[in-house]
Image 1 (spheres, one colour):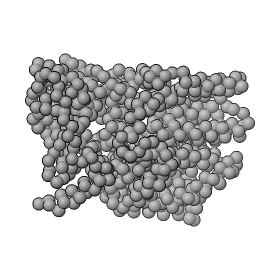
Image 2 (cartoon, helix red, strand yellow):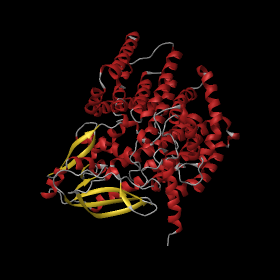
Image 3 (cartoon, rainbow, N blue to C red):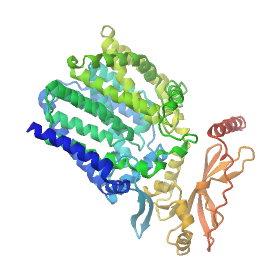
Image 4 (tube, rainbow, N blue to C red):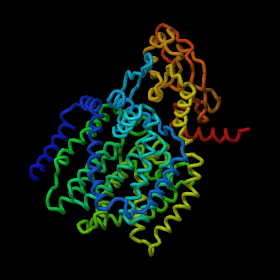
Length: 614
């Protein structure tokens, strides 16, 4: 029977490779994801929930329920979770990532398709999604948000509900991880160290998938520890499904399938036989959604976002290492509070890291005799190492960039694990946890909490504040019977406001004329961003937002989020009929400058701006 199941595993793996990489064209693959992605995620989540139920029942029976269990870890997790949440306001922190994920969840809820809506309209009281495209981001987080929509009704804020719950779950898993590594003191220290990280607070109240990614990293690690300890089918199924879900959370998280596979092979080697259940035999096919979805990068080369950072021609290269390391160290050891880092976590973590690497190598050499928790962690560290190396070779792998800081979260997590592992090995006459708690508390109150209070790391990313400004406009116009023309139309659509992109308004001007003449909408608004000439103060509409001379606009709302940009919402007063006059691309004042030159101009202007304040 076992030989038959192992043969079935090999056959399903071969079939998965053929289907995922050879038999379907990229277009066919993406169509399969669009129409089958929701159901694939539903199947994965149901299987994982079932396997966790089996494991949970075993743990409950082993430990006799809650009897003789201390309550203080629960209060610690609850208190630290509240600290992370109350210091940040809920909102969409990263423009495209978070709003694209929300858009996908919207289509999954309304249409059961994995598409980001690009056009949407209120048609006689019913909001209709009219056009969309598949996003490059994996589908697990949008599916979970869509499940909240299914259960409670569609609300953009459901993503905040999910991330709030995940934050408390993350801290609870951090405690359990520390406990498995070095006892209750290590668990408490892990929770305190994570709480000292302002970046975690920023993501806890945002709309991204970072919290889910961290939760599944720790979940997979803990289930790997259990599998090495129990070596049974239930533990293997939960462990494998957790790894598959992790691969469907963030693109690079598929690298953690490396330690998942190594842990499974390690157990099979120790047991002298492969252990395969019917569900395990089919697991390679459960990775098909990731393989098929990944073809979006070959269909749309723009998915790599190379244009966002001029001067790069490859997404990954070893030559990017030196510059990325310099920027990353600037993030970890910044003392200004501008980078949402935790100084105490960085200092302790980098002190512990060399010893942690040596501990890992030593454990791997004696893997056969190592305790299960130690062996699983040592193998899992190979995944952390591969993940870190990939980001260091990424063309946009600079953690001190406001958009990229969130990518440092798994590295911050491994710093926490390194600290508690090394401290557990040394344990300084049993005083390690008291000493670390005091040091972490000092770092929390002297650096992290002031940084959270100032919010410098959020304010310098003006695109996020600009997005919140759009939400203020929506709140001030609750009737939502108007149309908005905006290059980022998804923001409005996900809030059930009729919207269309600027290009659509240019290419189909007659449709705007028809809607304006027949008063189909109470008003038609346009969002535009303007660049400010630092020498003259003259403002020029940015190319992506330029509607040309055919559109006569009247300013309604205007706000200046940076010294060199002005954001404006205008009402369309009239539209000239006849052939469309293409916008004259004169170029914004800073368009021809390199990013470094543009930043120099911005800094010089800001200095003068501050000096001339009344």
